[in-house]
Image 1 (cartoon, rainbow, N blue to C red):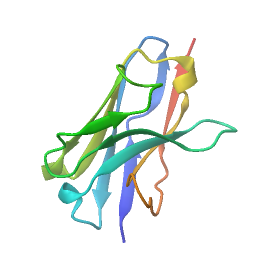
Image 2 (cartoon, rainbow, N blue to C red):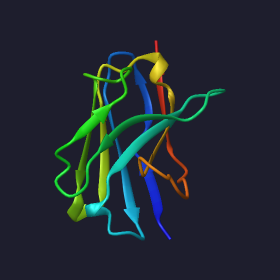
Image 3 (cartoon, rainbow, N blue to C red):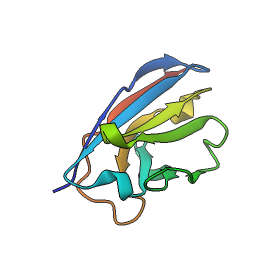
Length: 116
């Protein structure tokens, strides 16, 4: 069964940066497209960014993070990253990684809190 373990969240001031990580197990992750999602308090979970499988040469971003966030992958470490720059208070949420289609078995996520 696939498992996702997210880490790297924390408290940061507006304008700051964080990098969150997600270790994936139970699947051959290197060939799979992957994604980061987030869920803010009282809101539905939303897609943040996606990355293609193998080389990760194709990435896509939600408009609200475009130009500020970068998704990447290290297949040798079975890890997906999300580099977040120029953070805003509205980026405060729990961040999860999963598949961009048919997400499955959500991990615990990692809390990112941006203070104004």
